[in-house]
Length: 332
Image (cartoon, rainbow, N blue to C red; front, side, top):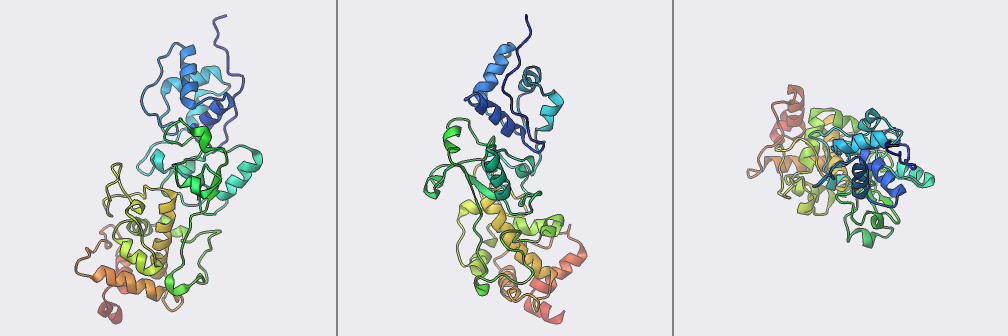
């Protein structure tokens, strides 16, 4: 008679789903919010409600896990598997806005939207299942509405208040990328299209490639960005800390930002990476990138930010051959 009744409607979690996403779907099944469902679960066990802000994906309350293990068919170990371990590259809640367009199509057909744990990592720019670039989740059907509010994927919003209104007609929008000015609308041969990658995935497997991506998202790259792509970036598109103070590379080690910023930064870094890896003769667009980057780096008022001690000697020499002073390139 003293047994706690189990919840009758608990959706099973998907294998790659985050805890916050699954718990949101549980709350949605009872037409409530996650915070209210948590209070109800804890009250049945005589536990005090959790206060303060909760990151449902990386640090849900321990007493909530215990309550769910008692009142659902899931074991506590299964619930803990859904939690994303917090690390330096884990995106803050405000930047968890990525969603795979192909996964979204499948989710829409199935009528179940959920967030994959891999999307919470700052270095994840493409879907490991479909290989396509991630897009930005939008809770409104029309772009004009999406510009007026901040929306987040399922289970990843900063607050529970108003979450149902944000998901009346969700969409995933691809990140807009611009071709290089000198190229017009034609991408170079061998460079992947929007449907796949606008950067070499191998770039992110190397310390040099990761440093280039961090550099491409810093304020140093603003001048390069304008000369290569032909449009200005605003300060909101720079890597920044919690107080929105601009952070310059190499003071940060991970691209902590919205998917709208991380993918364009990878696009610019990919162009620079390609220039380092292949001959300018084989890549017509490389001359423009080499000229702009080399000139910017060699201006007296620009601090030389690239040649890090942690780079292999071969990579430093390659950088000097491609982007060093003109006389250096001529002698190589």
